[in-house]
Length: 353
Ligand code: NAD
Ligand code: UDP
Image 1 (tube, protein in one colour):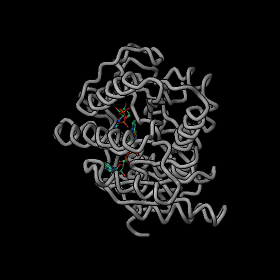
Image 2 (spheres, protein in one colour; image 1 turned 180 degrees about the horizontal axis):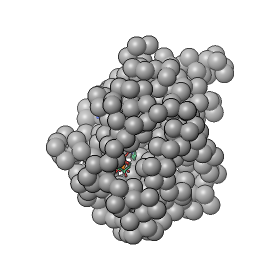
Image 3 (tube, protein in one colour; image 1 turned 45 degrees about the vertical axis):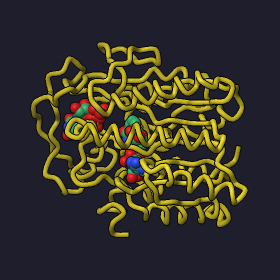
Image 4 (cartoon, protein in one colour; image 1 turned 180 degrees about the vertical axis):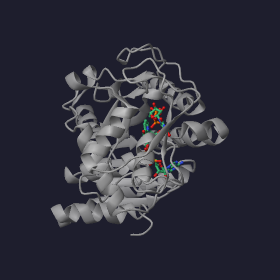
């Protein structure tokens, strides 16, 4: 297999994944509505890839389109067919991803995430494309006390965003069962990707004030925000703040390459993989690492706990390590250094470029 479609390829995870796929010589089609991204990222991807090999930049084909419109998806499959580079596999990342927003606008989340996926699957079937890597999330797990989470942990999301991810996994299970000989489906359950490409040319470019910790750290470090509010200092953890499994965005992006290569050489199946480092880091540990690595001040204060927060979410990543030709290589220091480089080079995200 040589030709892939990355839905949501202009977004944070999609742009890094598309870049690595291009570097490997694959043809990468991207469909993105740019509802949460800037199409300028395509130029950035081309610029980075051209430094490596001018020819590779031709392998990036972008279509602006919305998965909620089946015609938009058909257009890109049709184009790939006419150009004799038919899409053989899909990395499906397009969707809304904010927990808070999903609680305010559940219909919008169900519409985009679920209807978008249903349309995509219909078009894939029509064009006989049965290979799929889906962006699921650790948020679907019902977390137990201070235990590493493996793929068999109970699934019990607690917000509409997580519900859409669980529901899509169930849908994929049903699709697989209906044509077991054909489908190859991988659900990648991401933990907490942070950081940016080491060039500092692509990174996370959130709309407005971010909700997640790392983009907030970047905004406080660059004095866009006065201070960071840490949600609770009385959790039952080593320093009283919550623990997460932060993974460098390039390690996460690389997991898609490994998943795709695994999928290319294995039999039809549906399988889930946790994509994390297996190491837990507290909020204070992340802040201190960021301060030390970048030699910068990061004012913070403590505030009350965030509703629905969990104290400890860390992956048991052993299935991914033993099955995929993949392991996370980058340290927390790398994540902090590369994230800060992106922020310094692009203080206003892609807007100014
Ligand atoms: P992102 O918002 O940066 O990227 C998603 C992209 O999809 C955006 O470019 C957006 O414009 C596009 N998009 C959204 N709805 C669309 C639609 N209906 N049609 C076409 N394009 C659409 O988010 P991300 O962080 O890159 O996440 C990618 C995927 O990974 C999401 O599905 C998200 O739920 C999942 N995920 C992300 C994280 C994380 O921490 N970033 C963790 C777990 C899972
Ligand atoms: N967090 C925080 N202040 C913020 C945002 C996040 O203290 O303004 C904490 C949050 O309680 C959690 C960690 O940072 O323990 C990671 O939060 P994020 O929203 O980035 O990821 P998630 O909780 O979805 O894993």
